[in-house]
Length: 331
Ligand SMILES: [Zn+2]
Image (tube, rainbow, N blue to C red):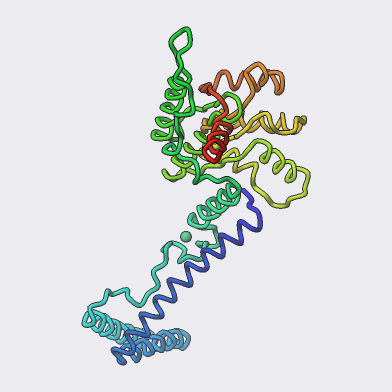
């Protein structure tokens, strides 16, 4: 999977910084130890010299073996003396060695010429970060979702908007709490300002906290990003595969994107591929099922009908109510 140059640069820079920090700490340790025990510096210098002498001995052959054995013993004696000094100072044996966050690749990102898992993980995290930057994820949590804006008035069947929304809220909280790769798909349906985005962001936050890779985006933004990549105006990007591979994909505001053959095909492809791979997706939309069928294809509508849990949102535009309340308070 390819990543954009920015993602590579950001991941490589972060890794290099981590490596430099580990080595800097080891260097500081060394300087401290040398000033407290000058003998330590002599020992380390001698150890470096024995390594060179050993290499020469191998080149000269003859009684190399005996010579090498003597060097080895000398080397071990020096090492023991150094260990003794560290112990005397009350320091651990590996005090002078850099402590890399990833011991497998020593924070270089590569093992035997192959990319280390730590760098792969970093690239992925960086790609998510750059894809999610435009979304105020942190602002929406379950705690900040208020049922006060939904009417308590019961209809003929004894149901109220608040009761219905309390159930929706409950389903979303349970979904977030138990989120796993086996979680079902959700489609949040209803008019503007009823809290669909708020609750889908709250689920996204919970899943991110659990360590899942979440991609969140409005369908409009996602389609234009895919378009730019598809038609070559943005090089080396990875949005397509991130959308298909991420642990949880949240497609906000389905139906607000420009209706083009490209958009319809791409959206179907994303939804269908994720469903086949059993990766959870959450869609929010103002459209009704009938409108979805009209706007997209019948195949798409049947994917949604068959594979998504439908959550109907009701009430009056919460954002509008908040604005009116603020205006009343000020007036
Ligand atoms: Zn590594």
